[in-house]
Amino acid sequence: MTESLDRTCVGCGQSEEQVRLEPCAVCGRYFCADCAHRAGFGRKFCSPACGRAYYFSGETDDDEDQPGNDD
Image (cartoon, rainbow, N blue to C red; front, side, top):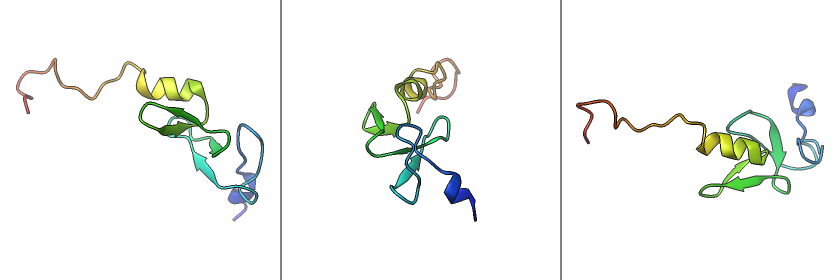
């Protein structure tokens, strides 16, 4: 179980043994609460770039252009 030893915060470099780490929803890198970038509705990401990519990637879940999908 050496995987937990390899996990470090991308911002400050602290290990999972020192602080609680969370995976980024976009890239999967780990970050701590002090280094987290908040975007949108309070979601946390490892960097401002990942926050922008999550909300402004150009991919939408809306089916507006497909007929017959009216909810």
